[in-house]
Image 1 (tube, helix red, strand yellow):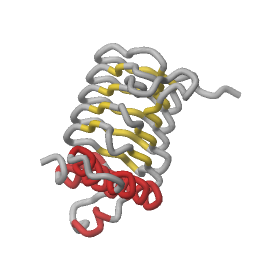
Image 2 (image 1 turned 180 degrees about the vertical axis):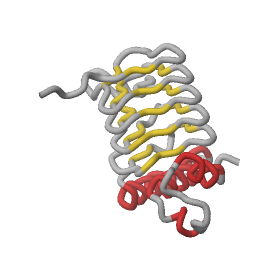
Image 3 (image 1 turned 90 degrees about the vertical axis):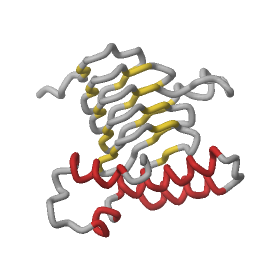
Image 4 (image 1 turned 90 degrees about the horizontal axis):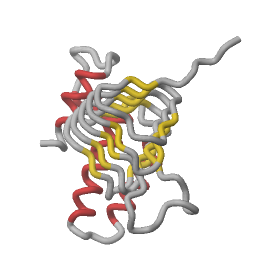
Length: 171
């Protein structure tokens, strides 16, 4: 079940989680908290419950620093390392086995370009890793098995099995 897979994925993907660390300690990880709160808010959103999904989402942002819209669609085995600064917009779609690092934005272009009722946010297919501070903007698709490097800005579709990085700073 997608709700509970976050614990096994956390142990698998986070090198700071060593054997012997208790279940209760894993619950204290902000990425785990953000995903659990998203799963609850998304479930309630799907039922058409008013107010509560957004309230849970807001609490999650306050608690973890990650803002995940309850309408976003997120697959199984999703993990966020650190969580702080992550933004996942309303029409984002995320496949299975995706990992985000802190500061990632899956956002739109802005009110001047995005139209209400249209898809405004990225689709991230299965087995994608997105590095620290990356921004993927607009209704683009990052195809499966791709990696997006730290602080990279994506505004076009990314082909399957790609690695995309930005230029590093130079002296």
